[in-house]
Image 1 (cartoon, rainbow over the protein chains, first blue to last red):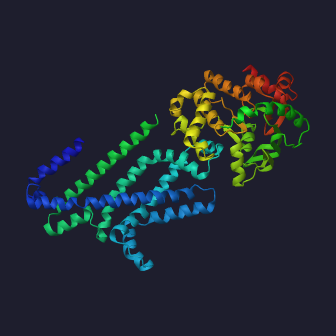
Image 2: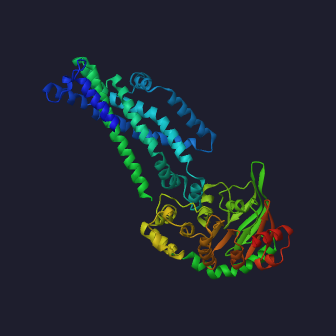
Image 3: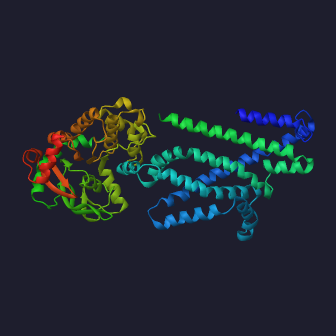
Length: 244
Length: 275
């Protein structure tokens, strides 16, 4: 925390020198306040986009992870192929492909938001699949055997015995992915999504103050991500507390 | 609620006598044996864990399986509820031939309960929820009925006051008793015990054995893998001694303890009793 104060102090101090023009985002002036509101208005889509994408990627990731744990080779090959292929595509490339390429291929045109969600979710699902696979594999064999011995079927074993334990273990990794997703959502600005980065870019074009505006942008992401991290840590603590 | 364990009592005792008779005519598969294993083999890679093993168990019979580590005791009982899949031979449990057919598997797992060395309780669920999971999801009991049944069996293993705790808050002996209660909640006809006291501190072994002894008197069919020879002597109808994947000797405890027929069993008993 001390370090963050130091950086903030440094920024404020350096703002006094001639290189900075904080007036563009000065909340005491009408113009500055409007600019700040404009910048902050992107937060809605950044968060909505990231949260929607991560929810989808968790579901898809789990569905991809399960065949990876199968005894049947065919299922495992499906899992490996999906993970390796999807993981190899850069997110920015995936965004462009989904937004500009997919309509040409399939005739389905997605709006900017859903194209962004789809690209981010797709990209993240490969990582989620690996996280789930590792988490599920970390559960001791005795848990499966106990579940089998009371005649639970595969679905119930996963739902009531394995996944609740696996999810507790992978929660920190899931938190990391959410942070990663929030940052990667900035790339969706290239197809015109009105999220934080896009708003900042637009303001820079009209105000010509990239230093100050992008500094605010940095702080915006910082605040969102610190809040998310704290939330994940709280959830971890709560889950741990609930079974001691 | 049907009290299978209680009702099975007199029947079990009657069948017990029959069980010895069946055993005398080895390989004779009459309706009286609830478990029949014929020429069962099991391989782990190149290692043969079970070599052509045959064993019949009568309904209500209490069988104790002993032998040195690596002798195939655990593998033997794990084949009975198909946690291990045997490679050759035939296993019939309560009239059902063990195959990969899911409906057969479901039937067998509903008939056979198992208690593990490491308890294998579900750590994220409270004791009561550990017990209710099977009855709710497999037997389709209402929550109320499942809880009532769970409490009945928790009382039976003498820890009803621990119902709302998590497994890690209990001692090893208590955890194992919860595990026994969890099996009982499915009201199985056969209970398998895989070294149930081996992971316990000495002072907790007695409380688990006490519960098992009480269960044995209820008429449920029990197969117990254990080194607790005092328990075996008190409770077993029949002792099975295994070594290197084979059943070396079978007999009533009073006979085998005083006059073991095979050298290997004699040496094993001496070692166990003198340790």
